[in-house]
Length: 425
Image 1 (cartoon, helix red, strand yellow):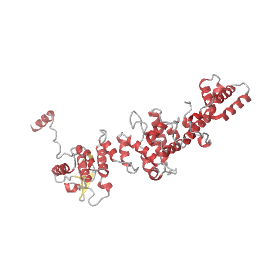
Image 2 (tube, rainbow, N blue to C red; image 1 turned 120 degrees about the vertical axis):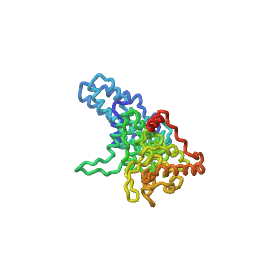
Image 3 (cartoon, rainbow, N blue to C red; image 1 turned 60 degrees about the vertical axis):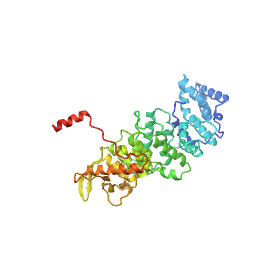
């Protein structure tokens, strides 16, 4: 609309008193008389007599938003440098007044009867609905330091991503030697602005590099606001949309880890991560643990395809009975252990060994590096096969639609069979 960015203009809004009381945006249209007066004054900016130019400049400034169409036209088309220069000086305030008038008009439209030309509004209300709480939240964001970010919605994805990263950097404390660390928590509005705008662009795709907002989601005031803020329904809707639009394995892992803290369901995110081919074995193992901890028997189907997956999820040193041993935990072991826990059964009753025997906390009990098959005697594979067989037998009888036996292992390919024959030879 105007060469200057809306965010720059909005920076002056707190110093400008509310203007519009009529809820109809049509009331903001500049009349022909006002426009004619403004254009006459703009022409006077080119007067060779300096006092005449100054007087026209001050009158245009007093006209404010009513002079905006004439000012913009002069900036784009005037052949007189002095006219264009002075109009460029007038434009920020006129534009700020125009946007403030739109915001006040929007606020006055409590019944939501009219469509308002405001940045990001359509995307915002498509998420939250046009409830009073959502309208208040949107207005608060536009009149806050987050305005620069919110008004970037609709611009090219890479530009929006830059705005997201820049705003997140402003909100995240930096530790500088010799300088006091800023420990002020980001407000709920700060975080929700980041989540809203980020949900409108691809998640880690198309060259858009958006850093995972770990600090903001775990240390901000958003968690409290989701419980007690009068606008909490709108806050929750945007939080849910951000979580739902995560597709990159990195941000999916983050979303999955903070979903419960943000009062959002974790199982759908875990299932999405399990289906992502780019997920690492440890990421999938973490997702299995989340499903086991928060899911129901209906979710057991997601475990079955991984019960024969031999990818190593954890390869660290394990201490068993005071003895240190390198006993890799495979994804199939995690899938079995978490299936059993979800079914309210104990993995140790199925021949597995716990790294944390006794009654560990849920965070340890439901960790992918807890249960494994001890292979000190070289019989881990036998115990594993027996445990898997017992599990399928129980699940096949007690879980609707669950197979009663593991699928037959695929036969070796001919090329592999020939290699084995050569080895035997």
